[in-house]
Image (cartoon, rainbow, N blue to C red; front, side, top):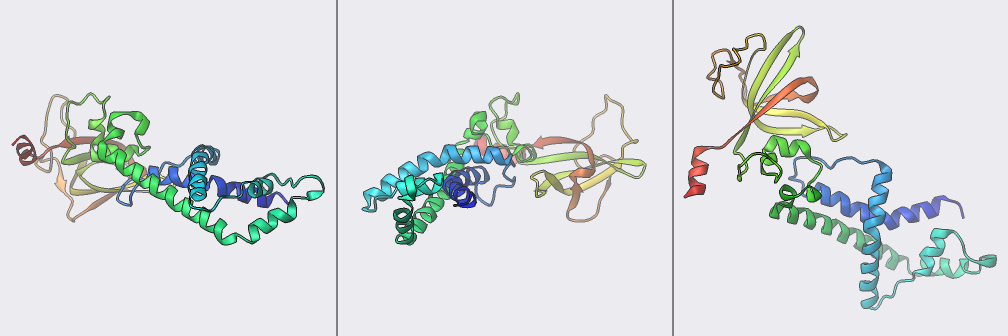
Length: 264
């Protein structure tokens, strides 16, 4: 037996752990930030750690339902060792060929359960706010926390706010040719590239000015387009490419009506 089949079987055995970790990190489709990409070796390590208890629990459950699993056959196939003179080869192949529907059902059902557990775990952490309270449960979705203002709710955050902001006002410096501009607007949405990095930021109520038209350090200006140095960018949405942004600043704000309702 060549090396390919034991490697494939090993992958099928650790796949439940990989699925569990992926769905836990990814959550529902509404989660705006992608799963952080780890090295393949790290994914395998997570798969092994989570797959072992999943298989133990699932085999006990299958056995309790009257279908005792054959552990010897997959171990022999995985090791590629069928004893002296391969005396275990024929019984092992017969066990697999005569119960292929049961084997397929075992793996498919376990994969489905692993995915469900991951999604449930993700929703539970998000609903309770455990990712705000401790880094242990925090997801590797840095830009999501920053661009939604949830970073203010972190236990270690110096902010005293206990409510998620109603909006995020972003200012970014982008250079066109030899001239640098300051773009500002309310963050409406953001997207990510296939590698998991921030790709675009979508702004509403967008304005811009030249960077050279700065005020003195002790001057203050209101948010929005009231500053006469800025001019409005006509259109419903302005899309900024993150790769073009040199620096950016985030300003979180709360609507007065929202705070009055919360206090009332």
